[in-house]
Length: 217
Image 1 (cartoon, rainbow, N blue to C red):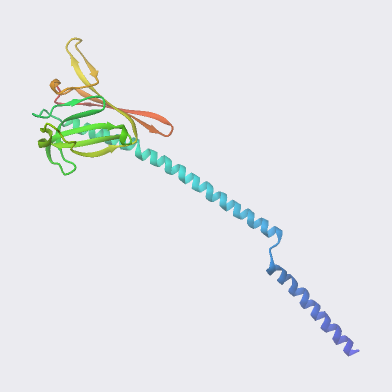
Image 2 (tube, rainbow, N blue to C red):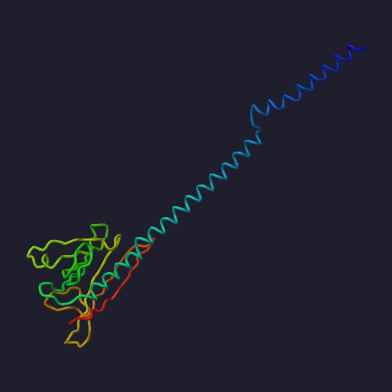
């Protein structure tokens, strides 16, 4: 009777051990379907969040890039042109001249290692990425028959158009009017109007600045 009781106890313990080990082994071997579905859902949510964050970052970068390369740069360029035009003066050998795309006049050179009196020019170059170029020529260069271009620097880029126009007093009509060109024999215009066309987003915008010249006439 004791032997039978011992056999029964040993069998019960063995069955208990097998029943306790099997779920652990099964759990280590593979995930359940529900666990796989939960993991896939979490991975999908994280992936979508990363994609949307990346897309929003690209959109913000595009807006900031367009803003930085257009309006602020153009306003700084217009301020520089206004400063140079306001400080121009009559000087022998350097006439005030210009047309719709280029303007040149006497001024004080203080950039690009040029110091002193010389010729300052601004011109629009559509073939150079729509750039507005500023060029400086020392006085010795400005007097040469075959004038070199001088030292150039970009003041703005990615422009669609730049147009200069010149204000003068008409003795016939006794009023001020505008024209598209100016020659050296006409002295210095009363004012210069600069119109800049540029792209911002999906629209073409214009900025206009009128600069009055103190030593005109």
